[in-house]
Length: 282
Image (cartoon, rainbow, N blue to C red; front, side, top):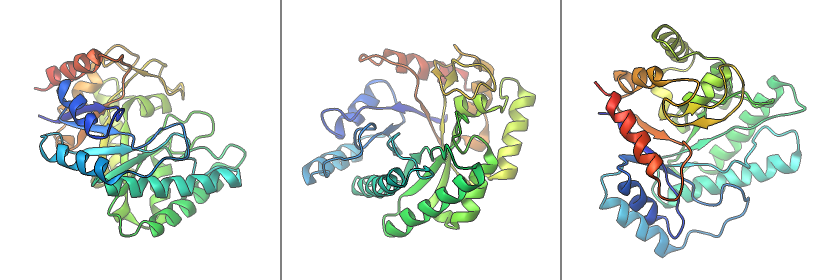
């Protein structure tokens, strides 16, 4: 059985994310370590880190990993934004290391007025700065497959491959495969033929050894829309079949599969989506 989970809130304390994950039946969880809409964050207090590490040791939830702030844009055309992004990503990696977490998922960003080739090079230069500054952290950066919205990079597998080549620090990089994003970017995974074609292209371009996690999200937006709009499993434009292919694909059975689907405070939607996914496993 694959490891299924969801993104969990750290409201009230990092350790409570574990409690919330257990409450809805998660095997793995993703968290923010700070507000995802603010640059600054107070340092993690010793007692908070210790409480989280102790709670995690008592739980079967594993791995716990991080999603970086949505503000980070390592390929921005704006000098101030790039500088803030580098500082913020270094801090996020330090925070993940403080909590003993293995990797951080990153939206690389959008170069806007810059050409894509230039944006990729700027992103690579800044990722190298971050990696050099966090050399002793042991935390990897998982570049997320993106929807290609606007001028954002990494809507193509080739973009991520080019970042790998330019950064030249494979041991510190990884990939997070988001189903909603790849579908919106133009990779059709709705039927078995399309799914196998997409996965073969991913393997040829990046290789499975670089894959650290999967985000399992259906899409409110249509195929190739380049819009990032998450929907409940089987209720969107992707449909149930694609998720059945993924959860039964033995190439991914060792990887965490996390949902980022809409939910309320009770989190019953998470329970329903996780039950749906588990029900697809043959």
